[in-house]
Amino acid sequence: MGSSAKIGIVTVSDRASRGEYEDLGGPALQGWFERALSSDWEPVARVIPDEQPVIEQTLRALADEDGCCLIVTTGGTGPAPRDVTPEATEAVCERMMPGFGELMRQISLKYVPTAILSRQTAGIRGNSLIVNLPGKPSAIAETLDELFPAIPYCVDLIEGPRLEAHPEVVKVFRPKGK
Amino acid sequence: MGSSAKIGIVTVSDRASRGEYEDLGGPALQGWFERALSSDWEPVARVIPDEQPVIEQTLRALADEDGCCLIVTTGGTGPAPRDVTPEATEAVCERMMPGFGELMRQISLKYVPTAILSRQTAGIRGNSLIVNLPGKPSAIAETLDELFPAIPYCVDLIEGPRLEAHPEVVKVFRPKGK
Amino acid sequence: MGSSAKIGIVTVSDRASRGEYEDLGGPALQGWFERALSSDWEPVARVIPDEQPVIEQTLRALADEDGCCLIVTTGGTGPAPRDVTPEATEAVCERMMPGFGELMRQISLKYVPTAILSRQTAGIRGNSLIVNLPGKPSAIAETLDELFPAIPYCVDLIEGPRLEAHPEVVKVFRPKGK
Image 1: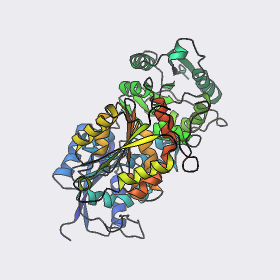
Image 2: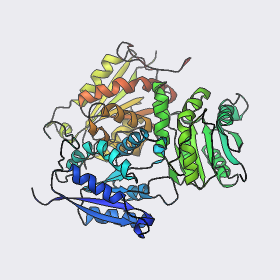
Image 3: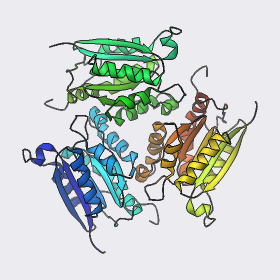
Image 4: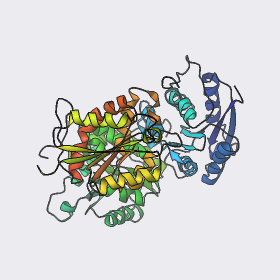
């Protein structure tokens, strides 16, 4: 099995990073992966302010130094002036994955018309897939339930560890023979 | 109530700007807002040619000098060489809102397969939301009916005035408590 | 009718270009157009490796020297490090057509959740429309069946030849009077 897969979990929030507000997004993400993943993994959690240089530095460190195969962010993807998570993500990625943002907005549109205000994106840096998830815990689960089936095969293609999930929680899809 | 919300309405059309063709898009946009909005507002209308520098200058002036919280354009979003409204929009915006273009193309795809030829986009410049709408009056209404519910909350988030609509025309959505 | 329309068909694959693997994507594309098109056309086929400069050079030559009104690629649009077809496409296009990638991923999502891993895009270079299609022959047909109805009108708008199709194979859409 080798070493366990590292998953970076980044809460981007001025208030949570100053301790004025309990971080709900990070624990919601970690709880989702605990329920879903059946293969070995460990979280690498960070809580940081909505500062583009800090977000970029955190994503780079999680990818390059910690060796996370997957980095998920929560928060900072709306239209407000302090929302800069997508810009930081794009700045550190070598290639963007437009299908993730498109599908995430489609999923959220089933619940609220303001889903189109989300600027969530995803991309690849080296051997790491970086995905911006929503800020609200309920939206995190709604999104990951539908998005995650494609993630393990993406991690395979960028030469990361083999992620497996409990099929009664989420059905991972890989093409036949992969 | 303070001063009324200003909405920029920009018709981008070589022929309309030369008076060779009656501007139908601008009046269709203005009529839609007259029917839909219940809060105070005033239009700031412009009819300009398909010249990228002119479009950029017009969008900048409407945002920075006229203080429009919302600027809608009609025309110039197709694949033809003179269609440069999306490029001008992207050039003046500080951040793009990809969900608007995605949803607008999805809406139009219900009517015509050539909806994918539209390059409509949206973005934010300072306290102004700029949205490229279709050129055809019938497509303008089809699009705004479905897109507008998310716009007032976006304007709130960029610190613009509070836009309200007649619920029997269009149902504005704001998260609870906002 | 004048000279026949030229359609560039580009297989991007390291293995196919070295002859280690039979090119299936290119013949699948050519077969689709043979079944679908009723107007005069001729293919200009190329099989090249996943090297961004080679892809760019090939696309430029097919557009500028061969005068292809439509250039379709197959392969190289996934997240793997060697997948660079979208980057090459974006590099040679003057304007991008985001609706194509969005619709192609929506089509593929009906079949597999990993459709979001495709980075397929499309754009315009001069009088040529360049479209990245999937690598798998079955996905090529699924995609073109739904995407092609919008392509002839796009080619009209960029001043290419008039493409016509057998309506029992695929229904081309043009606005009334066009």
